[in-house]
Length: 60
Image: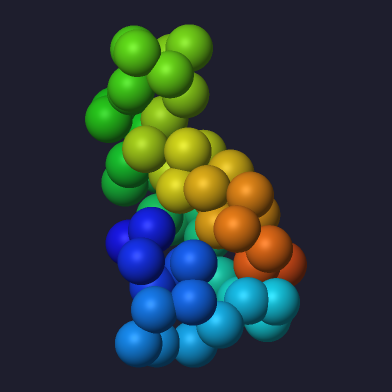
């Protein structure tokens, strides 16, 4: 994933990702907690990583 977000063979940030039905994804991934990252859920860490690489994430 880092290769694609860092300017690899796919889209290059900055861009805006509109995540439709984000509440459903958040709920589905709520049980997947990443203890080594301070207890963030997989969903939260994914959003944080996208934002870290310059992607504007709009949760709808």
